Amino acid sequence: MPFRNRIDAGRQLARALRHLRHTDLVVLGLPRGGVPVAAEVAKSLGAALDVVIVRKLGVPGRPEIAMGAIGEGDARVVNDYVLQVTGVTPVQFAAVERAERAELLARVDRLRQPGARRVAIRGRTVVIVDDGIATGATVRVACAVVRAAGSARVIIAAPVAPPEVVAELAEIADEVVCLETPPVFSAVGQWYEDFRQVTDAEVTALLRPVAVDGPVLIPADGVLLAGHLGVPPGARGLVIFVHGTGSGRHSPRNRAVADALGRDGFGTLLFDLLAPGEDDEEVGLVARTERLIDVTAWLRRRWPHGKIGYFGGSTGAGVALAAAASPDTHVSAVVSRGGRPDLALACLPLVTARTLLIVGGDDLEVIRFNQLAAVWMRCPYELAVLPGATHLFGEPGALAAVIHRSSAWFARHLT
Image (cartoon, rainbow, N blue to C red; front, top):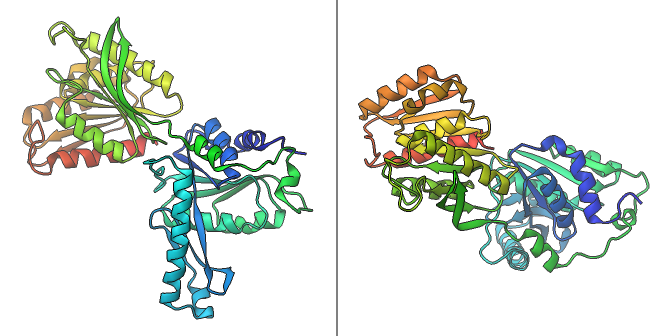
């Protein structure tokens, strides 16, 4: 038999999907049997793992005929042709949807940890995984629901399926990956040595979030630096905040940006560049840069698969760009808010990370500093001047504009 068990099938399937590594990827398992397979795929590809929970909306009296489908949130797909042919009224449709929505929510409650959020899929590549496909009915519904939820690309992946079903699914998915397509097919289980039933408890354990949200102590340059690390399940990337002189991890402006990035699916690390008892005069730009490089290495050891970016405020932007110039950090994107990139002038030609320089339109001196720095940059960069904003972006809507531009920049370059 081709597969010892679902774990073995998942590992083999992951090898066939390795071209998707380093993409903005979400792996969705179909409960229950598809989740152990999907878990191995997600682990191998360094991708976010979640389930796609769907319910078919059957025609009243003919439940085998699908007039639509629903998924988590408000995802809904309607087959207008079936409604027209069968004459189902809006009242009848609503009654079926209410009943199926209740069943869907009950299953969500059984499978998800209390308070756990779904992994964001809008604009991302989604791989729908099952342990095998017989007729393709459930996968079709899942594909429709995932597309309705805003995915950019949908890939269907399974260890085994009949060749004719694979051909049909290729018409609705962007890609179909199937390891075995036997011409004689009776049941999925016949292709496994061990095809025991998967329990709700096993699915719940596999979906347990690996999120982090709490204080950390980071060894860097011979001292311990206090920080706060927040990594949502399926984080799209991770942003390290680098504060300026006289500030720290509790900076209200940086905290506001970090909270917004967290809601957008990014992990964040806010930390103090100074150890307790140190002051700004003791620790200069070079020492701060070395500490940031150490902090980046510490974080990468704990989060090896995703991309990392820097968000630097004021003089912290100079530190961020100096560290980004180091070949040891491998950061992919930098955002400077009211920053002093000119402090790292000699390092700027070595920076390869995509860099966004955000400056207030009324912060004339800092605009000049950023224009000077831009002359030295060899990396792709943008200089965004926000009209009417001053150095601290305290004007109505100014910080919101910083957040919007920063999130969009990291979405482009960390995913």
